[in-house]
Image 1: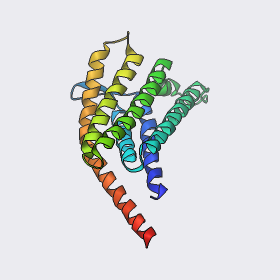
Image 2: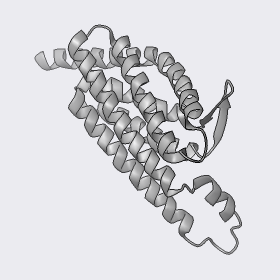
Image 3: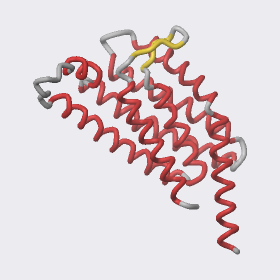
Image 4: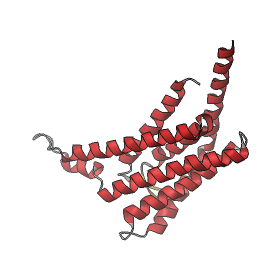
Length: 210
């Protein structure tokens, strides 16, 4: 298959991941549940990783996850540097800038740890279920792997970031509930992407034979 499709998916994965880390500085309420504003952007990464695992396999998906981790770490460092650099004398927005972009070391560690474990787990579980179901029942491996990995992500991130500061169990359950809804809604998107990519793969294979 042409590498262009994989490159586009990798770009969407990394851009969604990195912008989610920025958007997360705003806390929003969905159906009475308090969650970071980056929850939708971050959920997109699971759509992409499941699609890549389905079409290109576990090894390729793990490579994308590793690339995402490096990107997230680089963004975190660059943000901290930009906040620390002295502002121009005429620029009066340093306090607002810092309040939006600055994160404590505890939040950064929580974010990186939760990302790495949950994403690798998602790829592993998706691949494991596929070995049992073959090409059938995409919806099962998509929903089960995403649901369990999102639970891992919520537990790890909230525990590391907020344990001892606020009650973590309600935060974990609330965020996971919203993530479950998003996971169910993203299933048609995964089916569409897989369908389009498989059709493209078959077309390219036929052209190579001719």
